[in-house]
Image 1 (cartoon, rainbow, N blue to C red):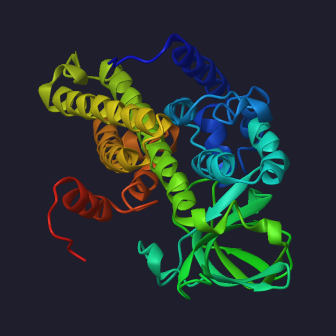
Image 2: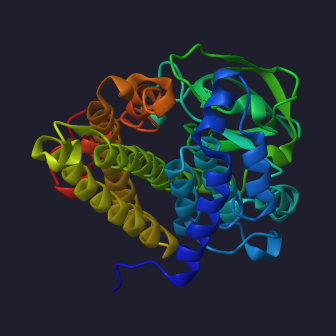
Amino acid sequence: MTFTESAERLALREAVAELAAKYGHEYYLEKARGGGHTSELWDEAGRLGYLGVSVPEAYGGGGAGIGELAAVCEEFCAAGTPMLLMVVSPAICATVLARFGTDEQKARWLPGFATGQVRMSFAITEPDAGSNSHRITTTARRDGGDWIVNGRKVFISGVDEADAVLVVGRTSDARTGKLRPALFIVPTDTPGFEYRAIPMDLVSPDKQFELVLDDVRLPGDALVGHPDAAIAQLFAGLNPERIMSAAFSVGIARYALDKAVNYAKQRSVFDAPIGSHQGIAHPLAEVKIELELARLMTQKAAAVYDSGDDVAAGEAANMAKYAGAEVAVRAVDRAVQVHGGNGLASEYGLGTMLAAVRVGRIAPVSREMILNYVAQHTLGLPKSY
């Protein structure tokens, strides 16, 4: 058992951090406030192979695991250049296709994931389903050799940048007559597929969208893998999503803590650096401890997932996501407090993150649902809902 990362992963972190620093938080904010995207950073990261580290080598990727991809995500966030599409495109969509896609689907999509040239969104959330995936109403029916898909999705990230969307719907089981989950690849230019941006009080280049699928006709091979593997396919994507979300939050917490510590060292009041006062030092020390615990849990979740134990990975991934989101909220809040009025000044690059880190407590699964999961599945308590 080891609690340290390999030399290869540490070298990967260093290289990614160097690239992210070349762009920096000012670049990120400029894109966000101007309505643009971090395309230059994404494209360069793709060319260097950072976005494809977990894509199988046979398709041009690095052949590593979700642990390496999470490390890449964390370093981008720690540099103040978080790219939400990383949580979705290479982590969920590429993972699902690599594990369950047909040979044709893998050949069609995975090389593009390896270079970052392919961007794919993931659509599961619906207006009336909430966190209950069993109440998804997006359905697909057979029409000859095609599929006809109808439904509506909300809070879907990055659709305006995506080549396609991996849509979670339901099909009828011919044996039981019941609806079961199914995943479909829907190119964003497909007739009947429409999307519109949801106005958000967030300063981010990554927009959220509502999707409408109105008699969207898809070829038979748009169905990912085999229908009988549907629920396994879904959770093959959700566990990496939680691990990447944890890494995303941990990276932002690192960014905020670094800003706070540097300010506390340099800012002097009454002839002493404010960091010498326990009222400043202790809250930052607490964040550091919580941050390291969240990082360890994230790395454990990635290691368990990469070992092939999906059941254990579910528990660890949920815990990591919870821990990461909580420390990110505290880190940003305390960093702003350390800066005083400067914490809300644009110059210091913290104020815009107050709302951003709050999202981590809500999506992709709320902290309350994680607590329900741990209470029921880990502690064995009666189901509460």
